[in-house]
Image 1 (cartoon, rainbow, N blue to C red):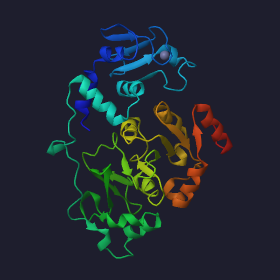
Image 2: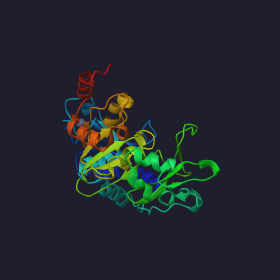
Image 3: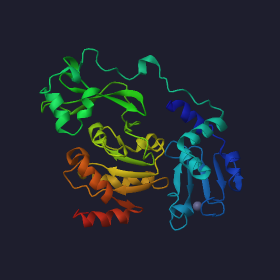
Length: 328
Ligand SMILES: [Zn+2]
């Protein structure tokens, strides 16, 4: 995704003429006012071309106050989310529509050479050529991700010395690599190749097509790969979920999301889930403090998938937390 082109398209999006297809519109200018198509509140919808947050925003005070939006949205959202909401389209279709109506062509994904993600170091040794008792091989085996031995290598020398190089993809597109430490002296535990957009993109371990509508969100590459043998797709958020990754995740088109963040990230769950509430069903597994998907292993993850509960409001999560013995 070329963000500059998308930003241009969003800024040039003809809010007024587009909104007229969905509701009654009152004025143009910097803020377009309209009857809210969700709660029907007269003139309650305002679409700001330049909000205080620095990007265009659609808000309805009535929906925001609660009770009128039927859980469809939170009463404030970005232009792409709002277009998607009213059009009922997939993310891909939504972005295509925004580009079409704004007249800013949808660019291919190619980036200039100097911004391309760093390639896997040429002198790294493929792990499949290493002995079975090589430390890096043992590490992957012990962490239930032995299948990665085929695609992973070991850096020799340089800034990634003796780190495991895990190539990272977003839906088959090479995005860079994680250089994961193999011993305690490796600090930080994970380094990433240069020009890798770990804030904006996620690692996709899309293992099969059977359950495209279900998606597990995890914090890391190895956590996501733990789901490799399970009939469900998983993504890794390169060291924890970031709000900016919302788009990359929703573009995968899930209908149900299972939040397998590390147990000690419990307080980050609600702020994360809020971003997704208008679009997908959200489920949370009974993850305890010191647990993460990789430590649970595939079997433990499968059990947690079955035990995950649906979260529709913050209170659901608080209640579930209490059941698990979590303090507020
Ligand atoms: Zn409303």
